Length: 421
Image 1: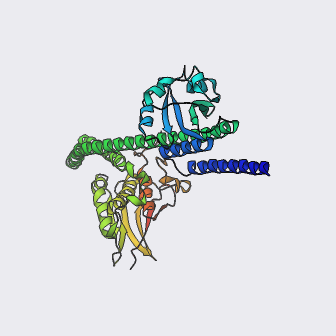
Image 2: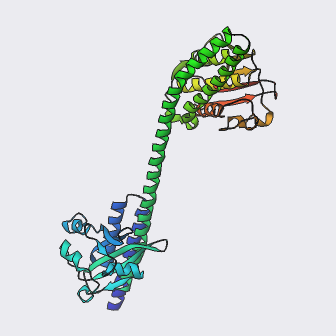
Image 3: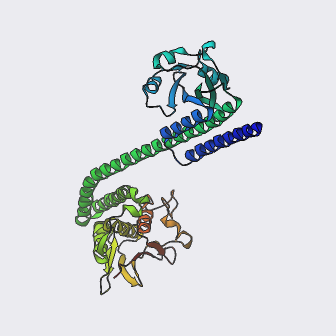
């Protein structure tokens, strides 16, 4: 009967230890906070192996020394704090032997083992009597050691070693996950910083370029109107180049809106007519330089929409600039809007180059140009329409184009929901 009772107790102990290992797995899969996670693993290691404490030592690849990274629940003790400041050599230490030989080492009396690094005990004030250590591996590479120190009853067993090896694998997974997360966060921070530098540069550069460019446009327009013959032709060439430069600058400024999200919108109640007229005013000088007539048509009752006025205005401006770019001189561009059920449809119609049917969807792709880049006549970076689409999408609207084909003109539509009530 006594034998049966002992066997039952042994089985019960094993089940309890396995349950503890399962708990560790659950915790590893539910948190990425490394310090409390490793402390939890250390507590489990000490409890399962019946040790006084447990610790993790990791290899410093620069100094080729081991350092204490984590301890059991007394990690805030003075012993633990002193241990963190004590490097352990890879040679002439038990932990170093575990790393270099890539195998577990079990010692029931460290005083008989010449590899025991007594400096650790002397400086920390913690006395090591017995030690069980197993290698920690990440992708077959030994990165450290998991130790159980001072067996409370009896000697270390093969079961102790087996359980500690499982915990070492779990600790290695936790450390690797934390390392990957740290690298990912660092990469995001780097990207964020690069993005900020890019936006700052674009903002400063565009501001500095706009002022002299405005002067060039003004003088070129004046010279074109007041001069005759060859001088007028030269002024027109300068004006054309300046207009292309202005469009490139506008594309640069608006580049940051390619991935605008709904959460970045500063929405307010706005009259559609006010946003439209503002967009028309923005492109007035560019249209005039090309002798284009800008006209607009409004319904009897003006409509209200809740939008980010600046961004929707920018989307309209981009569509108008696209119409100006592809319209022949002395032609007309019409802008207006219509009520459609619970939406408004804003449209821009031109009599320009038109769009081949196979490109009607692709024209909203970033950097897409209908013309071949080697032979195209019209400048630009191919960003205006893709930026307009990003802004409209963020407002949960739709944008599309219709055209009868090349040289048949085109109409662009923006659909936005009307305000309720």
